[in-house]
Image 1 (cartoon, rainbow, N blue to C red):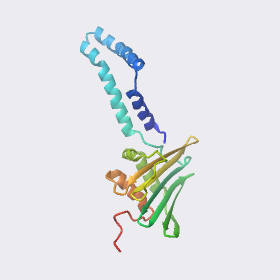
Image 2 (tube, rainbow, N blue to C red):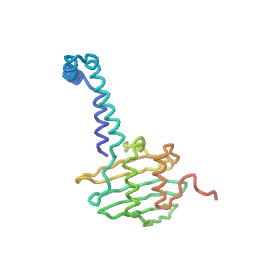
Image 3 (cartoon, one colour):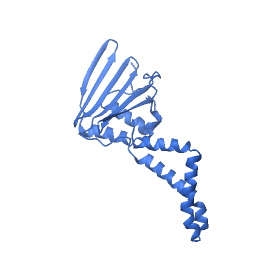
Image 4 (cartoon, rainbow, N blue to C red):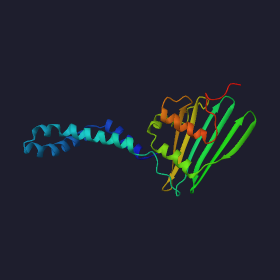
Length: 209
């Protein structure tokens, strides 16, 4: 999923791989910044101008990385989908929450043995908006991103969550593999809320037979 946050990550990666040309340009920039300071008697600040400049860039990147949302706001002209899949014991569960053309919907399908049951759950604009806005600013979710399609995804111990949206005619997709017992409180709470929309009993909450 390509977002403004991805652009920041790419900038940091390129910054880490700078070569002689990039550092030469940086020295030229430093000279342009420090010379006026030196000529006006601010020698100390002329020496510190480069580290201060670099520190400002890194701080700005960090703040932007923490504040920029992972996706655009919910809009009737965009398509928004959140899918969640997992297996708990003999039960396979798949939920699709969507907001298409301004219409919210939720479909949950349960497989147990040879039986398959599909239920259309209640989904309001406000409920989906809360799910979507929580995702947009859930920066801790990025550590659970999975991009390697060749790796077998263990949905018996994890939730596989796929988030997709369209923007300006393009489709963006992100996949996240989140453990049933997630140690990140905000991520765990978000998953629990998604499950609750389909009256899904969470792993560890099932009553003993």
